[in-house]
Every structure is written in C-alpha cells, then in structure tokens.
Image (cartoon, rainbow, N blue to C red; front, side, top):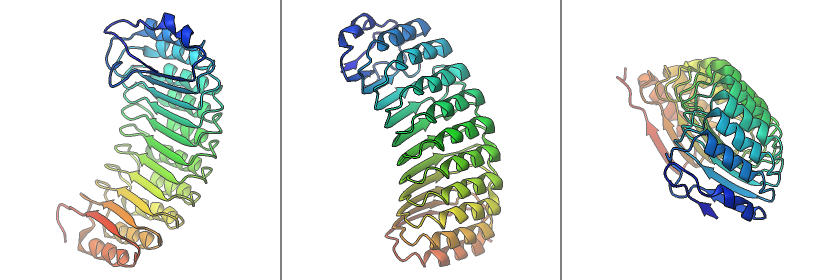
Amino acid sequence: MPIQFTKGKIFIFEFLETFKFTKFFKIGDEGASYSNEIGEESASGLGSALAKCINLSNLTLEIQCNQIGKKGASSLVSGLEKCINLSNLTLEFYSNQIGDEGASGLGFGLVNCIKLSNLILGLSSNQIGDKGASGLGFGLAKCINLSNLTINLDYNQIGYIGASGLGFGLAKCINLSNLTINFERNQIGDEGASGLGSGLTKCINLSNLTLKLHYNQIGYLGASGLGFGLEKCINLSNLTLEFYSNQIGDKGVSGLCSGLTKCINLSNLTLDLSYNQIGYLGASGLGFGLEKCINLSNLTLDLSYNQIGYLGASGLAFRLSKCINLSNLALNLKQKQFF
C-alpha cells in the first residue's frame, strides 16, 4: 500500500502497527515524499514503526531531497534490521546528507536481510565517502541471495578505498544476474576501478551489467583492471560501460578490450569512451577486440572528442566489418579534427 507525506509532518507512524502483518508496503508515491522537510526526528519515528512490520517482503521508501541526515538514516536502518523477511527493497534517499555514518549504518542494516533478491539503493548526492561506501560493501557481502542490484552513488566523495570496499562486497554476491552501479563524479581513480574489477571476477552469473564511471580520474591501469574483471563474466549478454571524461588512453582501451574478447555471449554492447585521450592505436585495438565478440547484434560506440584520426577510424571500420552478426550500429566519431 502506498503512503504519502504531508508538507512538514508525517501522519502515518502511529498507524503502521496496524499493518504489521502486511507483506507489501510503499512510502512515497509519484513524488509525494519528494522534498517534504522530513528530518531526523520523523525518520526515527518511521524506523521505529517499521521495526514492528517483521513480515514485510516488499518495501519501498522514497524520501528524496529531505533532511533525514546521518542520525535519521541510522534510525531507519535500525527498523530495517527487524525486517528479516524482505525479498524486495527499494530505498531512494537522494540528497539527504546521510554521509558516511548513514551509509555505513545502512550497510550494517542489510546484514540481517539475507533473503533479499532485489535491491535498489538511490544514494546520490549524500556526502558519502570511502567509509560509507565500504560499509555498504560490508552489508552487501551478506546478501548472498541477491539476483538484481542497482546502486546509485553519483555525486558523492568516494575514492579508491570506498570503491574497492564495494567491490569486495560484490565479490560475495555470486548469484547476481543484473547489476547497475553509478559512480559518476566521484574520485575512484585507477585503484578504485581495479577494485571493482576484482569484485566482478566472482560475479560469473551476470547477464546484464551497467557501469557508469564518468568523471572519476580513471587511467589506463583502472580500465585494464576492469577489463580483467570482465574476463570472468562469460555469461554477459548485455553490457553498458560509460567512461565519459576519464584518461584511459590507448593502453586503457587495450586492457579493456582484453576482457571484452572473453565475453563471447555479448549481444548488446554500449561503450561511451568520449573525452579519454584515445589515439589511432586505441581505436584500432578496440576494433580488434570487438571483432572477437562474434555474437554482437547491437553496438553503440561513442569515441567523440578523442584523437583517433583517419588511421584510427579506418582501422575501427575495417574490424567492425568482420562483425557479421551486427544488425544495429551507432557510432559517434566526432573529433576536433581528422588527420
């Protein structure tokens, strides 16, 4: 059942106990809890009420753009710890200033939710750093039955330690089939990207993977580390990698391609490598890697604003001509100039 918030106050907590035997619960419907001045005290009340709903199997909390803070998030989590029968959980906490303490608390709360199979965490713009991301990784490591996971951590302050901590948690989620991670505009760098790649080596059952890593100061070592992880994901059929505005260069493309060549079951691939200091060697090497993906039917490739030149474009085109099963191809090769 959907529950809505009124401006500045919440009127449902005292009634939640009435629904303590329900299995389906949703708070926030069509933006009803979007920017409603929900603070720490209200979030604490919600957490206390949820603690009594021990039979919940499906829970959605949409509390975007409020002020629940780290204490409010921790209080909410204390309630979730009691919901041990959850199988489907969606938490949309975008822009709530929960910080490291709130994110870590959330991770520890997930430890008890061992029956979770579907999890969506919307934690964008929350001042989360390495400690918070690592805490989330710790919790995810206990959710061994997860099959579908989406984590939005864009616009935080996560570095390589946090990204590696999250990767450590993912390594324990061996039953994942669908994974989406959004790290846009953090600072994970090479070590963080490699840490994520290390985690992916254990996710051998993945069929759908999306990684959004725009603006993360990733160089060739990080791209190569991710490529190493992809080598083990031999069951991937759908892959989206968004590397917009990093510095992977020719070597990074080569490392990434070494992983793609092992993903022989890929049918749908989207690569955004724009603004990455890629030259003609990188473009040609990318074509060589794609040639090995013999089952590709749909390819979207963005190499705009690099320096691939005429030689790179020609080499790429030659290799793509070998992809005989391609039915749909979208290329963006816009350069400052071809030479």
